[in-house]
Amino acid sequence: MSHGLLKLDDSIDWHAQWDAIYLFVREWLQVDFKGVRPVDRVFDVERNSAVKLPPSAHEWLRFATASYGLDPLFTFRDCLVVEQLKDHDAVSLLLQGEEDTYWAIESQHLNEDNPPVTVYYLDYNDPGGRFVRQGMWSPTITSFAFDYFLSYLHSPGGGFKVRTTSPKFSRDMLVSDFGLPVVFGHL
Image 1 (cartoon, one colour):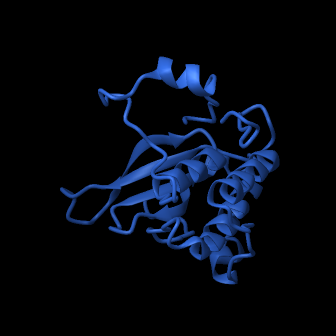
Image 2: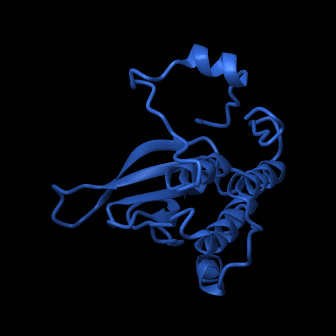
């Protein structure tokens, strides 16, 4: 964003990216917001296995837990589920409210500070209810979290997304009014 409100890009470290996300939430919604330590049960996966979550995943848990206090400006509509995925070498970060989509960190990336997030969809044709790996959803946990926040934001100024296929969308007009957009991960 222009005007110094948000400066996010993949060249800054994960901690600075989280600081920028928290700043955005506070400025955009005009609220006092910061992450909180989640209840201990979300760390059960670490205590009950050899899995150690990356630092950015811990910050995601703080962000997600604190975001319940943003209602009605933001809706955390899904289930904060941190567990080893059945049939996959991955640890979940979130289960969609309809219980047909997991977002997870593949175990091969658990040693990274801010790893990519992979999506797994329920295979409705499988009688055993298996989830199928679809692919990378986001290049980092921070861009996953920011995307999630923007997706369920109900700010006083209206929504934050516009489909680029909309006839009213004009990148040239946006650039002339606001300057070049900030690219953050896949956003």
